View 1 (cartoon, rainbow, N blue to C red):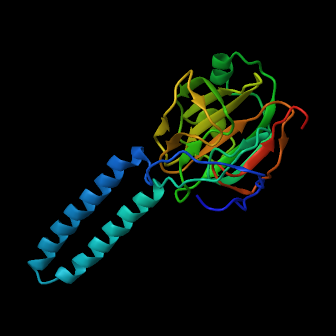
View 2: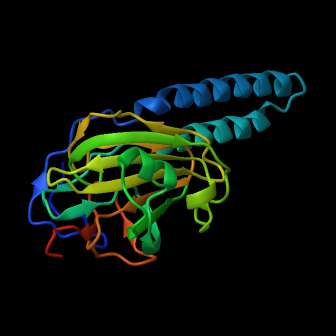
View 3: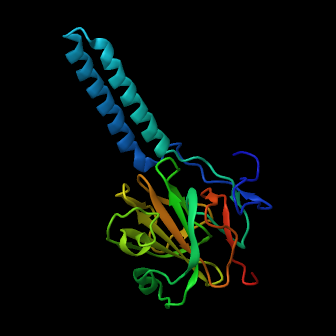
Length: 253
């Protein structure tokens, strides 16, 4: 754990909560990393053998370098660094690394409204877009109990597009805080991302900033805040999952 303060937009907590220890590489990435490494070794070996026969074995080094770079990128993609989590009961923390691509008001997605027993009232919404170089492990924006985790099949448009929140494949996580208010956190698949992972289920209790899943290879997470929340970020701001404070959600905000 490093010193306090993330330096990202909306951060500046007065105290920090210790992060839960976790492997440096997200466990969902282990088989994929292993596959990249094995494939790189096999392809490099085949290339070397084939080129050696014609006296061009030095060109096989390019294949080896490419394989090493791809394997290294895969390890980098599935990295899961510890975070400095603000210990603020009035804060909604970013669930994802990336860039804030939209700040508006919108009702919860239909399947999440139904599962959570919520109406169609609009809420403040903050959308964070993740590219393929961001950490893709997602974290709970607040402490609360999981009301539901609802998967909705769909398309795979670029996750930064407006229509992605309605048309793309997604998984909606509903959290109920200790004061009874709710927050929706929606993982949205993107143009390249085709696999949404959610580690929690109904009835689980999550701490603010606790890991709850990830999305593979570029995507987006939308946070539907309680009514009356004061959003502290704007479009274009960079966010850090588990560190950046997106909004003040105190009932006096």
